[in-house]
Image (tube, rainbow, N blue to C red):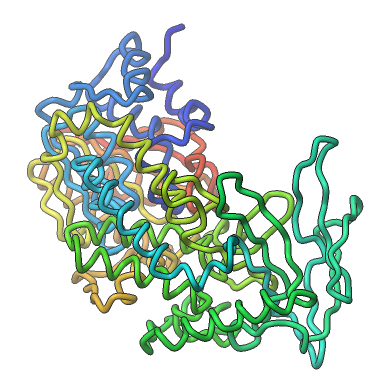
Length: 539
């Protein structure tokens, strides 16, 4: 069946769905564009015929590089999660410029490039360090022959009582699925009718205080033997585990140095401040924080050149290995705060052990641990050998820079995907990739310039006009693709730009509407549909 480039733009999301396309599945990014849509734009720019499109896409999905962009320079001045940069690499661009004023973007892209260049080395070093951290802190996470997977927490406490979800979890038996619930006395029992909205009231004095106003009422343990078994345990009834948990958190807290990375007041962070969280370190339990700090410290000390990769890895698992995560049965861990691209501490968080699993067999227990992503990394090493062997990653330049300050003289193709008007302040939510630097005392500097103002339509449009004008002055033969939200504000921006740019002999051609967020992105937002336009200067 023939695949047309125009059809590919519309169906790129569907073609990628369910594939967990690498390397993007390793480091998550908010609202990442489907890779095949970016491929379609790059193919359109060089006039690739529809008959070749199918071959190109099959090549990409098989992780084989191509040479369709040979001799061309591709530029993305708002690089974000690096999709354009990586796809241009796969398609054989002569050079790629990936810049973004958000330092978190450069961390992610540099980490991906490092993985593409030296995958086996990265995997081997990080695996060794993860095993060392597992052994070093085993007494905090394990007791006798069992280790913690999840610790169930509640923040809903009033007076002498706390409220918590009655449904703890499920396990499979031959006859089907068994639901495990907890009652007011802390007894565990099977209840096939329990649901996610059912709550239980438990005396606060019987619970374990993890942090100020955060209490644990139950845990899930797994056996460390050859046959891994998982068990739910009530902290109300099991004094031995309750005491171990209390001692482990207390010990971790004493080991940690007093560090505070301030949470800056903003649209995406204000709910954390309302909950009296002032430091990013407070979104973790003490032993979670110590585990992640130890992992980063080992990397910094033993293989500093891999610190970007380790930071990107820790930034990704913050959504699961912190109190931002909660246990929503039966779908496991998901935090709607991060799904809609914002921060909030749920009323019933869950503490995930960041190093849960079999460290020798690299078998993960629980979703979103360090070992979860090391398994993904191993998968990348197997599938991306073609890219690594050809050394094509030498062609990419990654800079933290304001788009207005970029030099576009050599650019043949520019893909411009700005934050959309009135939507999400990415410079706030991407702090998850800056927090890990603070954990190990590494400072990050923001480049000079200003971020595009997504809350002032006039300022937003003026910025894009200045940027596009600069691009066409410096590279008159360039082809520019602009992605914009498919809503009233996005429509207004394109209408204003069209009128202003027409006076400068720059034509805007609409290429249609597409589903603009890739499957498996770190956050699924309010902008599912986007509009793609093509800009060319005419004489």
